[in-house]
Length: 305
Image 1 (cartoon, one colour):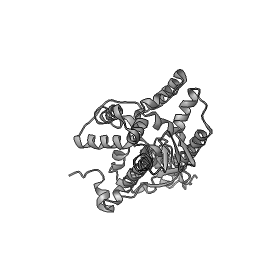
Image 2: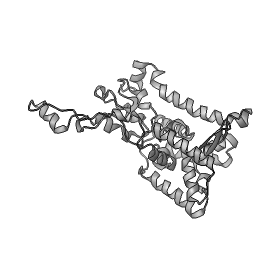
Image 3: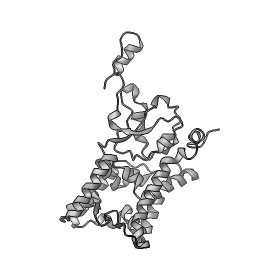
């Protein structure tokens, strides 16, 4: 009988080790939220503001560079703190991978993950096909909207901003948009919002295109083709080149900017194929032609670095 997703990893590594990165992500997401809530709820103002702009300990400004970009498109002149805050965030997400924001900080990720979990439990199959490039068109349209209206109008309906502000200050009618995102992912298309539509994810994928922190298929030769990593990954298209590209001379590093560095492929793999690493460890395999000759005894394969 077919085992459940990640069952072999749980048997080999134990439940905690097979969920360590998922638990770490949830801890990070709720810790970020707790820092913002400590002020209005408990009177401890560690962080003032929201994900769009905040001031930590009254000293460190942090600003969403995507919101700043909309503001610039709208013709606004940002304050110095906003520019500094956006620069800090850009540098941080460049280093750790732009879409790390999606998996480790964004509050909507909890909503869409819940929809994905329920979709699997209910056995919902198929759905509408949405091109992943759609999120880039939406990103362009939000900037065009700011340019035309002279406002950051998108942030009035952006589910990410609405949910975070709403949890802190009261969400009201914004729940309709959050519920709509949940139902979209549950019934219309798998991972529709985060994987295909969200312009925030599109923006941060561009930010982290050349980031050094990557997930690496360090032991890809041990893969037993269970496909659990594909099933659990929010962007499964990023896995195959690094996992199965050895014969084509492709290195083991997941280089796609769409990867969210969520670590779930590490969790569910019983063979310890994946690990966090650096893009600089992307050693290429022998050239295909030379490798074939070496296999036939006519030449010696030469490693290309």
